[in-house]
Image (cartoon, rainbow, N blue to C red):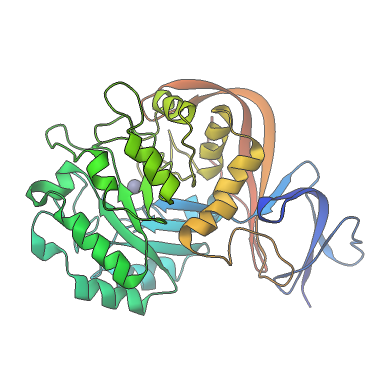
Length: 385
Ligand SMILES: [Zn+2]
């Protein structure tokens, strides 16, 4: 019987409203006991004194088709290599490449990998500057439905690029088709807003995009400074954004190389719209900055004024809800161990956004361990700010 005792950590599990000093005994890869003052005699122990123990962190937007184009990152780099136990690919593949993604990327990974299927058969095979939705033949509902039914355990929704570049002459017709597909499959849409890759293409106004969304759908890149974002020309949220939020549409950060702007974030937050999910939009091109990893992105939200509890909630309980995965985002006796261990450092550093804007931060979050079942992973060594 393999046992592992996590001693003296500050267990912060917002889903169960727990925040305190507890020990966690893991037996045969499952959480066996959560209680203070457990004895370690004869048991392998990890001293988590001074560390935060949280439900396995969930990064809900990444690009994980390893080696594909300029984006495809290894899931374990942003996953267990960053103290994160679940990573979600945001539509790297359409239906045709999904079996390859599953077999060669998701299944061998040490991190749990979930995925959105791209509405376009091309997925991210072509760069984001190409139109992947203009030709109506590039959307094949029957094949998407078949791919989803075969991979229900992994698929969490349909990814739609709502940019002028991707939509091309098709206008909003792909959104209409995505809507119908989502309804048929009972899956949410993940919609990318913000024209970050083209100076010439005109994005649809976000108001027109929101008209196609329903409760549970997700808008990613909520703090983008690019055309097609949530603010009107006067820095006000379009009224329809608040209406969408009130109806149950969800909003995700999607940091990325282009789409976290601190000025936009402040304006959006000042007008009362908060993120449901926090995500890196991590890929090969932003790992070395400005994104680094999910804990660093979470620390940027701390610098924007959120509490530790709020930020951990976004990356655990809220992320699980956004993915429709009630089995994730909490710590429960009897479940497979799925934990992230972080160090909250009280120190001053300069947080940078995607446009090199800076924000004085007073707390940093550094991954120190990820635990899945019986496996314990140390993070990869990288230079963080
Ligand atoms: Zn992305």
